[in-house]
Every structure is written in C-alpha cells, then in structure tokens.
Amino acid sequence: MNLRMLRILFAVLALQLCAPANAQRAGGGGGEWQSILDESTALFLQGKFLPSIKRAQEGLEKLESGKGAGRPVAAAFLTRMAEGYRVLSRNEIAEPMYERALKIREEAFGPDHRLVAQTLTGFGLMREVQGRLPEAEAMLRRALDIREKELGPESSGVALSLIAVASVYRRQGRTAEGESLLKRALAIEEKAKGPDDRQIARVLQSLGELYLNERRYPEATAAYLRAIAIWEKMSGSKHPLSAEAMTGLADVYRAQDRLDDADALYKRATTIVEDSLDRGHPRMAKSLGGAAAVAFLRRDFERAEALYEAALKVREESLGPEHPEVARTLDRLAEVETELGLPQLAEKLTARADAIRAKEKK
Image (cartoon, rainbow, N blue to C red; front, side, top):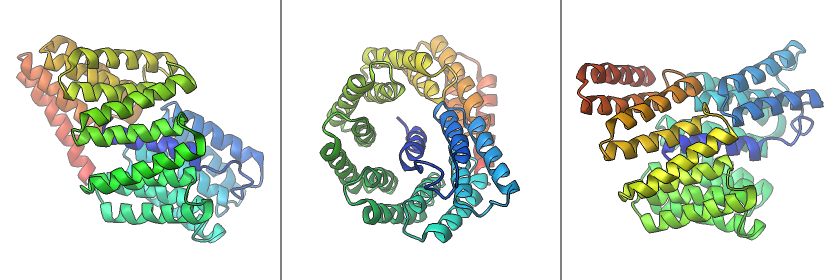
C-alpha cells in the first residue's frame, strides 16, 4: 500500500474512531445533526467522497441558517468536509475548514479536548501530504499528547495517534522511531483487545508498509499475513480491508519477483472489493494497478494497458481528473504505450500528468 492509500485508510480510521459518539456530546443538541453526520460518514467509507462532502455541507448550511455557525456541531461538519477534500487533494479548500473547526472546538472545549485532537489529526495529516513535515509533526504530537492525557496512555485513540506520528517519522527518514511507535500502538491494542482485533490488523498493515519500504521482506510478509488472518477470522474472507492487506502482501511479493503469487493476490483483492464495495471504489484502483505492474514486468503490455486504463478510470471518477494518483497512473500508462510502439500517445499522457503536477504545486 503506497503512502497515498495509507492516508486514505487513516482518514477512514479517523472518521470511525475519533468522531463524537453523538451530536449531543459534540454540543449539537439533537439527533438530527448526528443523522446527517452518519450519512456523510457512510458515503465516505464507500469511497463516495464528493457526495459525502455534499451531505455534510447541507448539514452545515442548515445549521448556520438557524444561527448555529459557532456551535460545536458545526466543527463536526467542517471536519467531515475537510477530510473529504484532503483525500481528494483539494488542500486549499480543506485548510480553512480545518482552521475554522479547530478554532470552534478550542473555544468550546478548551485546547486539550479529544475533539481538538481529532481536528489536529486530520490537519496534521494534510500537512504531511503537503510536505510540511515539521508542522505535521507538531500537530500530530499535540494530538497524541491530548489523547494520552484525556484518554490514558493505553487507549485506542493514543494508538491511532501513534500511527499518524509514525507516518511522518517515516517521511523524515526516522524509520527506527516510526517502527517503535507502531510497535507501541500494536502493544496497546493487543493488551486491550487480545491478539485478533481489527484494529490490530490495521496496525500490522502499517508495519507491513514500513517494512516493505525498508526492503525487510520477511518481516513485511509476516505482518501482512497476520493482518489477513485477523480480517478473515473477525470479518470473513471477503472484507474490503482484508483486500487492502492482500494488496500490501502482493506488493511485497512483486518486490521479490514472486510474480505468480503477487498476481493471484491482486486478482483476489480485486474480486473482494468489487463484491463488497463496487468496481468504482478507490481501493479497486490499487489492486488493478498492482496487477498491471505484474503484467508489465512479464512484458504482457496489452494486459498491462487494459489494467492501467481501468485503474485510471476508477481514479478519475472517484478522486477527480486532477488528483496526484491520476498523474501517477498516467505515467505508468505512458510507459506501457511506449513499449507498445505508440510514442505520440505516451507523450500526450505524460504531458497531462505533468500538467496535473504543475497545478498541484501552485
């Protein structure tokens, strides 16, 4: 699983585990707001990011029409919308939403509340995406400190923050520190929930990604295999996050030129996502892209072309035509077209990818 998909997965975890249990606890004053938040969250988890944003926007507009712009529940809507825009790489839209949500929550609850930590986590992860790593580290460390004080040093909220800080450390080249934080998160979850909890599988997937990047293939394989076993035990063999772990393991196999093993796992993951979510879900593109990479290594360029085109379509529809993941897919497809003897088409694809990257830098 690449860094971009790790951020998408973490956004899902933040929504699931850090959101207020109900609108009353968030200061919303009624179940109507929570119902709207739940609908927005459900759409997000289905990979329907724009509809999720739209539903949260509708809730915010309705709240503000009743002079509720400064109420804490407004911050919940803003955070939902910011998470969606962050996944879509629309950071220029997400940033003022995070800032406003943070201000509302700090004024309503004080600087050391768990809801402040929630907003800081999303904001910090956005700073990581932007490459503003010192700011990201400061925000995520502050969120970790808040959760340790309010929830205790061995809570799942703390484990979630440890995963986020570890991601920044890895980007900074502080791999040993990142690994230490992930192992601490794993120990917290194992102590609280035993060896086979879903959250443990999520931490193992983060460890697997770290080990893969370090080319520590035996450790990466062990982490992903254990994660897959947990998903299958807890949720059955066709859970979409089981497919995420399978794709990670397939990446490990591909890095070792175990192409048959990798291809089989990519195909299995693709089937699971298609059956449990839908073919247009962003996770589908990761499995399709992995299978395309295997086909490319086998010099089966026609199959690689078809798979990259399918991945491109999914990413354009789910993330938008100017998302960085679209640019990366265009680059891979251009390589295929070059091998197929179509240099002019390859140049057009590369030019489009370069235009996306140029716009992102502005």
